[in-house]
Length: 117
Length: 117
DNA sequence: CTATCATTCAACTATTTTGTTGACTGATCC
DNA sequence: GGATCAGTCAACAAAATAGTTGAATGATAG
Image 1: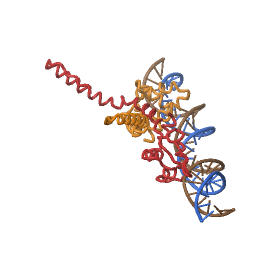
Image 2: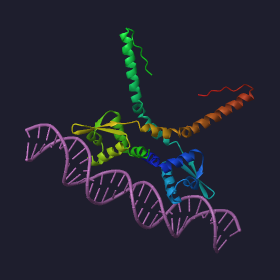
Image 3: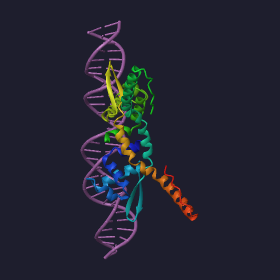
Image 4: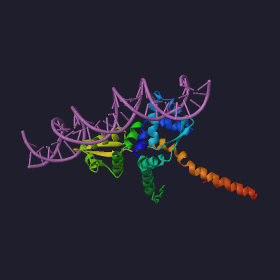
């Protein structure tokens, strides 16, 4: 988990993952957009590999990388737990509006309707 | 984005977020479960704060922390992009089974049924 | 045998991160 | 005034990270 989030915490590596989402890439192709030495890019790739986000196939004399998205599911779930909190504000607003409606309705002596979800 | 994923890349900080999900906590309460000095825990809290995941309210002589989940939505979306890939294997299996069905069906000269979701 | 290609490895440096300890702050209580 | 409390700040050390350069690898092509 640490390794996955750490891998994602760098723009260079996120860009590499994006590129891999479009299809397999050699180390050279992954490195190309980044203003750094090939050796440095190679290290970034190794970080992604250690996090299990990349599978490497040594083909001919080139190393071909593939996206391995499966481990991202746990990270996604970890964050998903907090979804209830970033949607809470909207819920609260909604609830307030609904209460206001209910108030108006009851003032008109009409029983308020429940509308949960 | 870097800051958010970096904040999440440490178990200590993820635990603090979990604790905050249960309600507001003082710095001391957040630090308590962790085998480190209060100053060290305070630094972790500062990392979370810098990532915008915590709001601090200075109340009385204690600092009370609140979860600020909103920035997590972007991180969640970032990862969600890859959902198509970690579900792909199942899709492929499904498709293969469906094609096999279709094959059998056409051999029986019966039009195949669609059953999308 | 030598050159080339795609990439890794090793050694090094600079920066950041994570932890420690001890001193400081700012308010209240006696 | 002096003690206490919750926390921060500063200075330090150890480890990890991110980058560099130059040499090594391992297979094929000439």
